Amino acid sequence: MAHEDLTKRQMRVEFIKAIITGTLGDKSPYINYAEPEKKIAKQAWSLGNALAEMEMKKREEERASKDPNP
View 1 (cartoon, rainbow, N blue to C red):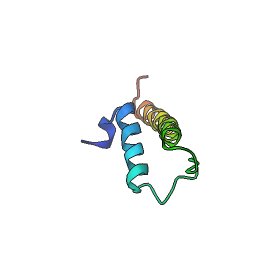
View 2: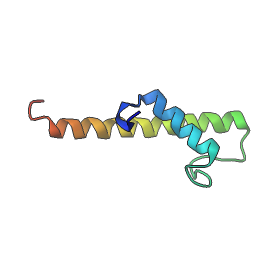
View 3: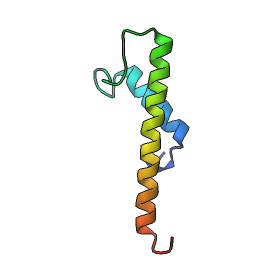
């Protein structure tokens, strides 16, 4: 599946998987790991939401700049 084909929800899921598996880096600076697991998951989901929103806006802007007829 191409990266462009990911939905917002799929991006969040992939981001959370990356946090859990450690492929995103050692630990995210945006998550307080001293919190209970449920709260960490909630923080990760919120951060995933924010990152997905930013990525979607970036893609929309790129598409708009390529499209000569808005």
